[in-house]
Amino acid sequence: MNAISDDPVARESLPLLPAKTVSVGRFDISYCDIGAKDAPTIVLCHGLASSGRQFSDDALFFVEHGFRVILPDLRGHGRSSVPKNLKVDEFSIPNMANDLIAILDDASVEAVHYVGNSLGGILALHLLPTHADRFITFTTFGTSYALSTPRFPADAVPKIYDFIGPEWVDKIIAGSTSKRRSAQELVHELLDDYDITAVSYTAKNVGNYDLIKNAKSFQKPILMLRGGEDVLVNAALMTTMHEMKKQQNFAYMDIPRGGHCANLDAQQEVRIALLGFFKLHAPLATT
Image (tube, rainbow, N blue to C red; front, side):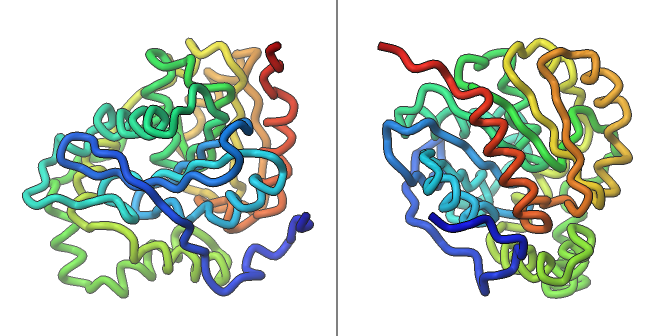
C-alpha cells in the first residue's frame, strides 16, 4: 500500500482511467468506476472546466484503502459527449444534477460518500432534499452553498475565449485556481477536457443560487474543507458558515495550503481528512 505523498506533483500527468457511459437524453455521460463492487463507494465530482481526471490519483489511493470510487465527467466536460446546437437550459443545475443520479443508477450503487469540488458540490446540494437516501455523507471544497454574481450573456465567454486565445485563457484560469506552479500545471492539463460553450452555459446557470436550506434539511454528516488560498470562494462563504455552524451534523476543516482545487494543492491533508471522515461515518454492516 502506497504511503500518502506530501508532494502533489510527484507525478508527471494525471492518469486517464477506464470509463463507461450512460445516456441521459441526447448526452452520453462518461464516468470511471474502479474498485471492488461490494466496497463502500465514494463519488469524487469535479468542478467547472475540469473533469474526473482531477481526482484520478485520489481514486487509486482510496481503492487501495478499500473503497470503490466513481469519477463523473459532467456533461460538456471530459469524455462526456457534446451534441451539436447546445442550449443554455441543458446545463441547468437540475439537469446536470440528474446526470449524477443516472450514473449511480447505471452503476447499481445505492448510497455513496459524496465529495464535490465547486460545481460538483453545487449539483449535490440540489439533490439533498429529494435524494437524501443516495448519500452516506456529503463533503465539499471550493463550494459556497449560496452565491450571487452579476449576470452575463451566455455567449460572452466564447467571445473572450476567441479574442484572447485558449492558451492565455487556460493560463489565467490555472493561475487563479492555485498559487503553486505544480498544481497550476495539473489544472492546465485538465483544461483540455471541456467544451467552451458548455462551460459558458453552465456558468450562466450557476452564477446565482441559494441552496443553504437544502443543506440544513439534510440530516446526515456534512463536511466542508475550506482551502486557505481559495480567496474568491472564501469571500462568498460568510453566509454559508453563519447558517451551517448551527447544524450539529456539520463540520468544517481548514486546509491552509488548499486553493480552489485543494486536492491538487494539499493532497495529503485532503486525503487524510476525507479518509477519517469516511471511516468515522461508515455505514453499519447488515446481516
